[in-house]
Length: 293
Ligand code: GDP
Image: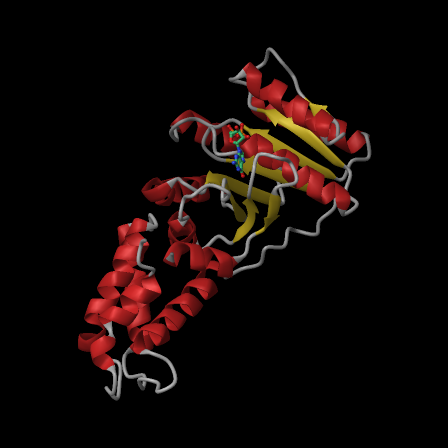
């Protein structure tokens, strides 16, 4: 059996029984365990470092409680701090109508699936969704979006044979508006790695369709690379939210903390399976427990 972080901290702080206050020295071993837990959950090392500093500031000088073990006391402080950080910002989407949402991210992260999941969830709330296929590089991507659109019974605008993504976006937008649809979701192309051309393309698409929300879709198992991905997309298209997918897998999801810390963009939704209703608003408390293990 693996020892939980609570067990490890309880162990690391056994010597504190009867100590009056938490101090940098008497917490050193415990904080090392916390750092190891964050790193093994794939939190970026710089983010782990600043998080530990913050926790240290909160803890130093606190009286050691009589009612719980010092290990439990630290775990509670860490858990509260992590939940608060992960939960900063609202999970709500803009209330504008029509509501225009642009989905961005690396290939394979779950953009197309999440586009359909979001459309399905908002359709239940009374929106009339219209999907727009802006991934012109992989013909299979357009087919995939059309397939999921059929499954959730919403229209999908696609145009084959032209690489002019911003023009496709604009045309999709006018078609959707003319049909009286009030939720337009643009599914953009992803690459295995971020490249200049992709970034220029989504910047121009954003300029032309002026979305109310720009959501970055990332695989929950992305790990250390999350920092770079979130930073680059945020600088290019000013994200309004992050969607973490594949949280049904075993990844510990430390990327959530890394991305939040680096961009300060709220994590709005979570993908929890391949099916189109396996989708939920993001729960910071669940993610905090998952990261701490
Ligand atoms: P895109 O390239 O970013 O558009 O990614 P896709 O939407 O095509 O998704 C890539 C793969 O991830 C597909 O096999 C999806 O079924 C799968 N996928 C997407 N979201 C989730 C999720 O939340 N959980 C699981 N288990 N699989 C997912």
